[in-house]
Amino acid sequence: MKKSKKIAVFLGVFLALAAVFYFALQPKTNSALKTNTTTKTATSKATKQKKKITLTAVGDSLTYGVGDTTNKGGYVALIKQKLVKQNKLQVTTYNYGKTGDRSEQIEKRVLESKTIQKNLKNADVITLTVGGNDLMQVLQKNFLYLANNTLSSTMPSAKKSYAKKLTSLLKTIRKYNKDAPIFMFSVYNPFYVYFPTLTQIQQYTDEWNEVSKKVIASDSKIYFVDINKQLSEGQYYGKSKSSLKNSTTTDLNNVSDGKLETMLSDTEEKNDYLSSEDHFHPNNKGYRYMTSQLYKVMMAHKKTWLEEN
Image: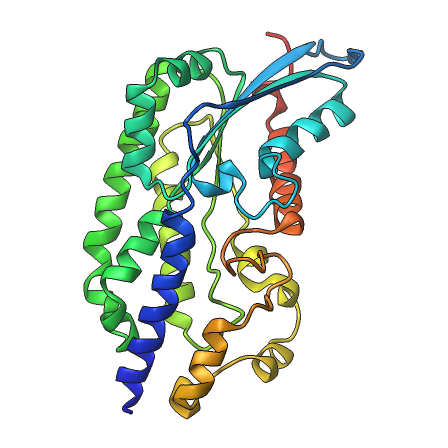
């Protein structure tokens, strides 16, 4: 089998399997998971801290918490716990994540739901996961171009379209809350540890994140939470890539058809930060990392949400 054809077949199957988990695991309702935790309130000597805050999370499966084996809502539940413990707050969270949603679908839910609108309006903090499904759709529709390394001809228009949709989504959110800081997560490349030599996938993931950064630059209260490198490279992040290349497939042209099938059906996850159930979403460790990064960025901008005006 020719190299380009073999890679195309493999990526097509792999992306199709990924789509099952991205688009088929739809939650039964769009109702938010509301949680409230109360502790003693602490006040700072220098500034007066709020006694309670509301955090409204909107987005896709990463907000919903797919891959979280505790079924508590991934980073949304974890950031609440951290805020309560570290800042002695009363925290109410609303989780409006839905598996499979692209940017325009998240916006549609916001526009159609009075409940989401109300809880956005009352939010002190808004978090957002978006863009992963938009990028997945581009890869799925163009995997032949990806296999032949000619996707570069398609990406400019795809990125332009995404920028327009993301801009519209953020404007819609701002329609209901002009002041609350928005903390938006980056997207990541779940294929990296499996296929480190398919560098074009990481390239387009990085470019997708750059689109997001450019879009949010016009709003001084939207902050980027970067999880790309850690979740993409997992336990190999910051280390020599030689061990990664020795333990993964580097040239699909040298892999037999039978081994390709075995690789696709392998239930062992090679990235310590991703779920072994679908090889795509964060596992508990991945969500803890998302939470730590979110908390770090939130605290760097605490004047926008934690301190009394």
